Image (cartoon, rainbow, N blue to C red; front, side, top):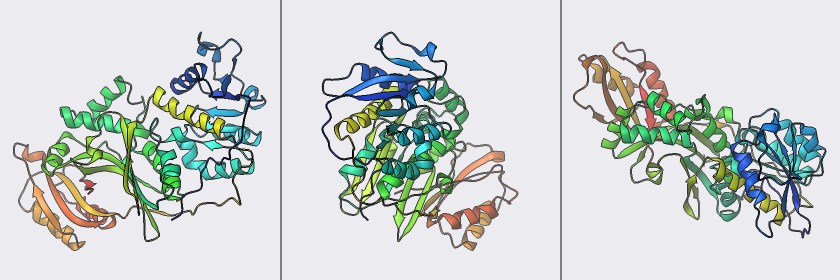
Length: 434
């Protein structure tokens, strides 16, 4: 597979005047970007000229230069002579309209907006190409970890066929807290919110939507595969409990929210879900709010990228790095040759892996036999059964591990098992990754 065409297309020229930069959104990341730009290093060739924000008067800071234009009218930015529009407002609307307008008016665009790039990246990339401008989004995945640049440039000579990783720091913070302290999910989430690691509405994080958007971007850049976010299987970590860490440790594993995508015989497989990973894996060693991405290539094998994936300063560093890239390689001719849209793939989640099934039952004779019978009906082999002592027989947890089989077979078997009258709660199914 050839290296994917860049979303940010560029060609080298010499520039003697600074690039004028406008920042839209003066929150945690926007203010950090502005502070870096206002203390820029010699030779950076960047000048912050505009800041947009709603109710902008309350956002003014004493360290900004006196000539900086503060505005709450987007037209003041779009109609100005700024060279680069930095979108840090987030969301799809009105960010999509603003980015389109900026490109059409001849401005380069830098964004950290993963949802925007996941949903509209190929379309906006084509527009940037037509307008002979750059669309850069290195901060949209893994914050301060330069994984997108590395996949596009550093590994361009390989044929990547798999990307896998921990892409959401909030989930990783919650799961590692549960693992280390035995904290139930609801309590761990509350503590993550109090510590500033989780939003008041944590849905995008804990239910996988944030990581799914990042996986779409990684697939586009690393695998040259275009897919829509809604096609990718997305499962929550809400059902994970401390008992799952007890059992997973007995299996030499731990639990992490894993995002993975790979190309297999012309098919694109992808999922975002909690999974068991071996304790010796870099994915297991990751703690707190960090991110990690593993890419696998036909020739170069595995390459691991890790670091802080969230927070104002790491994300701001990625944004400013994109700005410096534009300043150094200021495009004047866009893409060399015709625009080539990457192939669009339907997404499947039918991975073949071993499985961890956790049941909570009202104990009575014949439970294991009933489960084994249903699994055998779907041509699924049991690998092992684990049951720890000391639990109430009215809500008894135990685990069955399965030999490698497809996701579709497991889901079909569990749909039947969920009808059995001895279940106290819905079974939990987690893939076991090698």
